[in-house]
Length: 156
Image 1 (tube, rainbow, N blue to C red):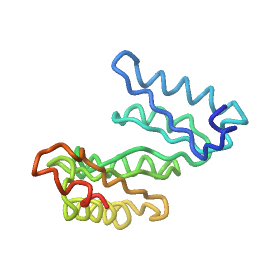
Image 2 (image 1 turned 90 degrees about the vertical axis):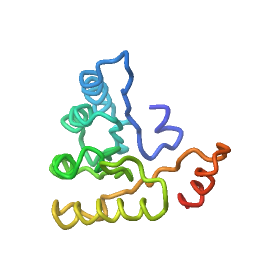
Image 3 (image 1 turned 135 degrees about the horizontal axis):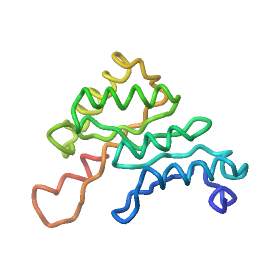
C-alpha cells in the first residue's frame, strides 16, 4: 500500500527464493493484494524465473498484469506456449534477450533475438505489439576483462 501511496505505477511481485514454495506464495499474495482497493488500482508485475509461479499469479490477477518475463531460452515451442497463456489472460509481457544459446551479449545478438521474439509473438501468436516490452539485458561492465569492454555500448 505504501508503494502506491508513494507514487508507484506498478507493483512488482516476486516470490523467487530458495526457502519459499513459490506457487502457493504467489497465489496467497495476489489473492490478498487484489482485495486491497488502494493496491489493486495499479497493475501487478508478476515477476519470476519459474513459469509455474507466473501462471499461479495470472490465475488470480485482475485487470492487466505485466509478466516479467518470457524468453526463447527454453526453445521456441515453450516460448509460444508461455506467450499464448499470457495473451489468454490479457497481460502484457517483458521479453528477455535470451535464446537457446544463452543471453545476448552483443548489439547484433540483442537485435536478432528481440526481432525473432517480436516476429513470433506478433505473426504466430498474434500477441498485441503494444503489450510487448523488451529487456535487452545489460551485462556486467568494468570487469577488467577485455571481452566485456563493449557491454555498456552494446546495451545502449
